Image (cartoon, rainbow, N blue to C red; front, side, top):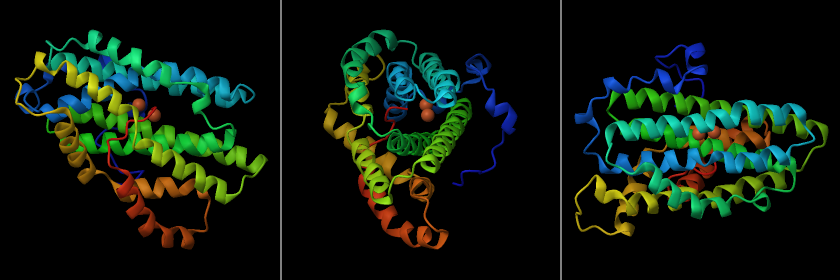
Length: 287
Ligand SMILES: [Fe+2]
Ligand SMILES: [Fe+2]
């Protein structure tokens, strides 16, 4: 997939999509309701996205001395992430109305909220921007993958909207990083270190916390098939991993290094191998 890949939707329409415009009445349940894997992946994503505001407040405070960054985070980024959560919830509740979303979410949030601390941010504002690029690369790749795994048209359109937003977030964070870097450069070794550290963290991402709480409430929608959590998670992550758009992710991950074009091309194959190894889990991250 290319960052600028054409979409069936006009770019202007995509930029202004609204939860209310989702054609929930047009969902074809036969193409989705029995898909347990997508149930886990979509509900987990709806939890992490809905919890975004907890994390967003920390990030806004981290850039308090940069009014334009702070304004974009508060007025665009956070509302868009929360809209992802609302839209995914609406879709999940339309397809699996018996799932006690709020109850499961409350349990998830009680465990998740204490993990969203200011200490988790990189002290260096430039390197935190690099970390944000990694997270948005992860979310863009994740929603791209979910769309590939989905056959239901309303869901595919929703995932296309969200994926497009996540790529937009990545572009903003990269742009802000370049701005900060131009004012006061930080060395490539430290940038590479920040990239690697955040990539490694994605392996223990928040999606694991979310997945456990979805799993705990699965019996409302699916009969017990005797499988345990670890086996389900391994199967699920394997399915996601095989579909991840590695080329796209590697191109996005290398950008903050600001390398000469030929060197960037040389580095892509080894970094692709590293990224594949690291992508052992679905990467919703702090989106
Ligand atoms: Fe998101
Ligand atoms: Fe995002």
